[in-house]
Amino acid sequence: MNTARRQVLKTGGGVTMLTLLAAAGWLKPGDAQAQTWNKVAFETKSLDETVKAMGGAAPAQSKDITFFSTPDIAENGAVVPIGVTSAIPKTESIAILVEKNPNMLAAIFEIPPGTDPSLSTRVKMGQSSNVYALVKADGKFYMASKEIKVTLGGCGG
Amino acid sequence: MADPMKIRANVSGDSTEVKVLMNHEMETGQRKDANGATIPAWFIQNVTVTYGGKTVLSAQWGPAVAKNPFLAFKFKGGAKGEKVQITWVDNKGDKRTDEAVIA
Amino acid sequence: MAVANRRIVRWGAFALALAAPIVLGQGSAVDEIAKYRAALQDGNPAELWEVRGEGIWKAPVGPGKASLEKCDLGLGPGVVKGAYAAMPRYFADADKVMDLETRLVWCRVKLQGMSEADAKKNPFGGPNNKSDMEALVAFVTSESRGARMNVSIDHPKEREAYRIGEKIFYFRGGPHDFGCVTCHGEDGKRIRLQDLPNLTTKEGAQKAYTTWPAYRVSQGELRSFQWRLNDCFRQQRFPELVFTSDASIALTMYLARNANGAPFDAPAIKR
Image (tube, rainbow over all chains, first blue to last red; front, side, top):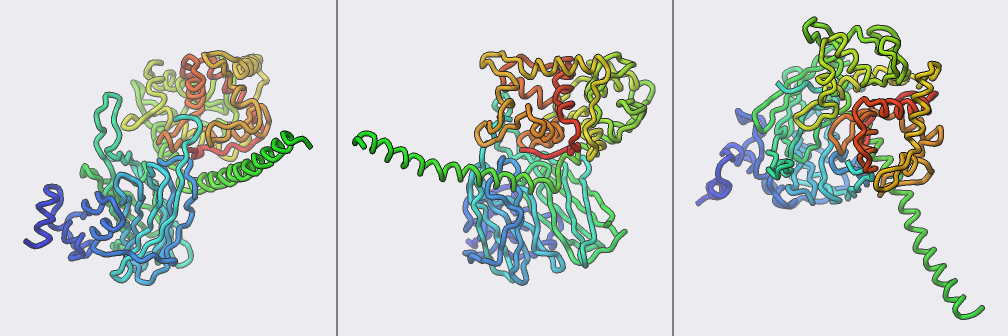
């Protein structure tokens, strides 16, 4: 049995063939008729699993991926600002993962040519954790990490 | 239809800087209500930003993106008076498109 | 020196050595939290409430299909710009001192024919339950951004409200014998890692009052000053501070007047 079919049987409903093909890298984003949503990638529990679901393998640590406007301590985990810049040439996508969240992958951004490989957004963190920035450039995967502590503020709600 | 986004698009050198605030609960599906029932996941799954008919950014989001999501990025090109469109689609199939004039 | 004394001195020095990094650690944690707060300033979800509030202000509702655009917030009918920085204030038509929310309830009843109960409904929103009042507060306060706080106590009823507010601030009660002053009456107080403003100093009072309403990240909602006071009462285990009650107006009067002179800088964003 080929891997793709085995994956379909394993993951069951809600995962279209298109999604799997996109995850396996056989489709370029934008090819699919409907919006693709990489369900498999959003349910992974480890960095390696996520990279695999995105069609890659073992990301290399890179000093060319940097965080900006990303504090070391978040006063509240509900909103944690994360800014990522990739100086790696031919950056195609930037993904943000939170290691200790129930599911690691928070977001994937596809960067077409002409768009700066630099963006900022806000994620939820369930607890103090490493945050990974995963970059796909020229077909290969790279990553950088940063530890962010989440405190509990003083006044309850 | 869902509440509108707040989009700011400004010329910055030879690029356009886009900042957007979206109105969305981004419910994770992990929380329980007062009766102990799980509040179903409800979150934006796809975001597309277009300019001049071309996609300048697209994203797939999970529920870990913060409530009332914020996004900021830059793309090359864009002139004052031209438009940028942003569309989001959530896991219930609800969608919202807004556009902003580049300042 | 006796052996015992030497041991005490040695342990004392050891304890000091341990304490120092903790104290320094606290300092750098405060800096990092300041960075967190700074990073949140760009892109404040409060703006979503401001836009919605402006829509509600302008929407014609009720039997007369009237909007709130003739509501007098103290500077004349429909004048929103700068109005919040001069509130609470005495309103002759109501013959009472009112804060913003009380005045908005008044206008919704008088101009739009709403019942008072309906106008006061749902003051603090939640997920899937947006509060019109919070949106209106966001809009009106945003029009005072940059204006210097200039709350007057010229009218005898304004002075009375200020005095009552001051009494409430210092009043201790409830199961913990707390008063506002318990948490906000001295420098250097904090709850867990959250520094508490000293509201008895000019600087503390100004910084605190001029940054409400605020999008509270931990609430995921825009919260007004009425909410802030209500929640303080809850934390003190006091009876509920009723929305737009005279007590809430008096306490607001006291705190707002104490912030006079400072530029208003809200809606802000806080944890």
